[in-house]
Image (cartoon, rainbow, N blue to C red):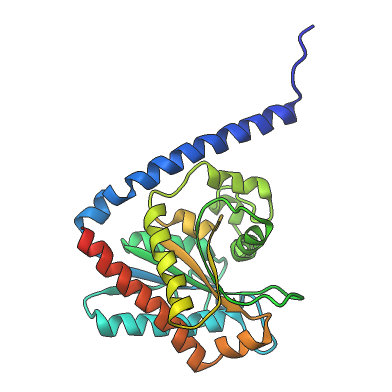
Length: 283
């Protein structure tokens, strides 16, 4: 009698096969990123600024502040700085007040609305701004994420927390194609479809963290990869910036202050300016 491997083993082998294929695909996509027709033919004209959370979803909380307020304040300052320097730039905010983007009387579109708005606006860059939290640990510093497979538990936990906003959506199982932000298996989906904008996303993310470290005097935790749904669904270079830890009292005071928000926004702005000039000179 021929012994057949158990179903679980077959499934595991298929997953490994898919991951291997995604690695090959990732190398191909990033190699071709610089020749993407959209990037080659047009300069940066439209930036999407996405303040995380909002409305009935405050995000993570510190002792006296909440993530949604911090993210919105920094986002508005960033938009103002870009508009003053580049008046011809089109700036699209996913929200400008304390609301949940896409909020409707009977249901919420959440992450789906953010990505859909970015794509419909034909954005050339998507910048999602958040604040971090790790209660019970003295964590501090900034980190900027691009779409990719998380390599450690910490990155996975950040992605789970930021993706969990989709659970507010009454139709989240249908709208998010069965994706479960709490299930590790759901994130396998991200390994099978890497972004064609990975190289440009990494380039901008590196500039953001470099500005935080060298100009803003912040501790940079580096550029990381994780499975953020909103980054996966946006058809443009996209990053998610964690501006600091509200669970750290010193950082909470900094992020909640006008001075701290000005410094963070200025760092992202300088990274944007450098990225814009570099990409347009190449094009």
